[in-house]
Image (cartoon, rainbow, N blue to C red; front, side, top):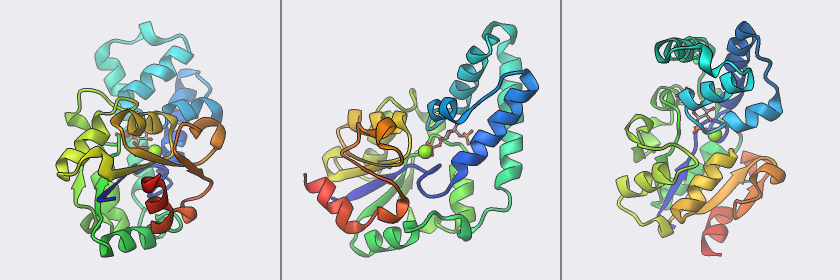
Length: 218
Ligand code: B16
Ligand code: MG
């Protein structure tokens, strides 16, 4: 195991809930009600694709021009950015900091494979930016999760093969992306939605170097 590629929202920190609250607010303004089950589909996919799914849910996809959709996505992002303003190291999910430091100590490379364009800002707020050897820029990808490109690019940027990497995700689209890239996937969350991963754990606390090494060696 030479490198670990981390998803951000839902793995390093719980921004997944902020995304949900911000989309819920926009949905309410448009008369579209979102629930947690629907929100599972939004995890790991881009802002534009999330908006498309929400508008489709309300049967409103044909009601807006491209420019109007962009404005709606920006509106959601402004709400989201307000929500993340106060974030700090206290918002790192349990067990993550220890895991990152232990991996670093062992010389394992760390990469961020997040669909979020806010990723670098959040890493900085969490005080984790210096631990990461690379960040994939989601704006430069031709296809987002579940396509493998984001994880393949992470491996390329770190100069390692996909077989030498582990990918960690909390979203079904992300697990599919890792699997399609040919990496071993570890998922955090519910076995029923994330069962395609090589290993599913209930909490980030269970992510240890030993667990990662065991999954990689399988
Ligand atoms: P932004 P991840 C993803 O991040 C989120 O899971 C997803 O809900 C969000 O829409 C996407 O980032 C884009 O985020 O609007 O900040 O660019 O889980 O891949 O780290
Ligand atoms: Mg995520």
